[in-house]
Length: 406
Image 1 (cartoon, helix red, strand yellow):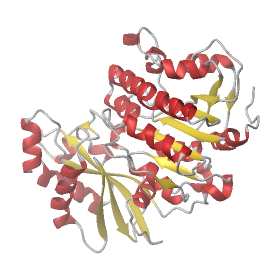
Image 2 (image 1 turned 180 degrees about the horizontal axis):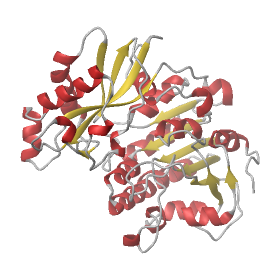
Image 3 (image 1 turned 90 degrees about the vertical axis):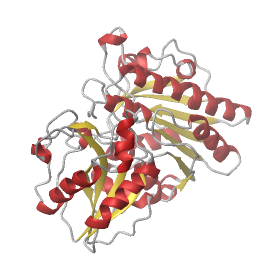
Image 4 (image 1 turned 90 degrees about the horizontal axis):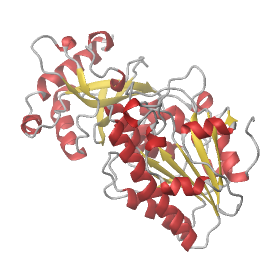
């Protein structure tokens, strides 16, 4: 038996008037998921423990079988694992986003965040911007590391874990009240803006109608994590397929292999087919038992507040990932179980993460029982199956144990 998780980051949502009162998942044309649903279990699962922030960090740890209350030490340390940062016990790691601020007259604290991702800037351009700012800011205490696209890391030796607001929670708002209370961190953000707003790369981006990457934004602080081996816990050899450092960092932390897919960038126009083909190859030719396919696009479209692009990202997930994985495993004659789900909702209305339970679909290729239902939030709720702890999903996927409360 082979096992697959297809994780549409932030895919869950709420009914949207512009979509006829349907969610993007309900509205989207998803023939592959709907076909699987006819021979699957659908239900709801709570991935975010009560009282914890609804981030992709806590949620994906939960989905992959690790109780965040036990294992979570912050988002950025997981990303730092992915990019090879050698963390010391005294280090505190922060996410360093490249964001788009307004460039109005007035002080830095009077600007607003327009885009938390700087128009999904390329990693190549972002690396140049980071390097040019860090010539001035980096020293023995503060070190910067290039990640992917707009997502980067800052390591503060002998630092403090400060609770800072994610930039996607501040979209369109004046930033003053959300700036770091620490004097040095605040000054680094201010200085990055002074350097970047007239940087040649940003002047060229603005000339093309693209959002400039004109400021650092620190958040997501944490310390070095201590994660147990996935293979030791679950007895499965697993592989992670994702474009984003957070998921690759989780994989490094739990001893899971990573497949790098060319053209996978975490955006709407990523290499969906490459991810699907990599999973099939890993499971049918490379000796892996388990593949975790993470697709970031639905979450990014939720943050952008675009219902239509979120629908498009879900349709791409369906036709260019799920369909291809099913066809590939069927062609290979493999028996398999496939779990399809979001990690958390990212409603278009609020443009950020929320803690609500999410719908899951669990398909078993050996099961023949048929149902007349589709995979979406409404029908998953109506089905009455609820799993209270997301970290029970892996045991349920691998052993089929009835852990749900009906």
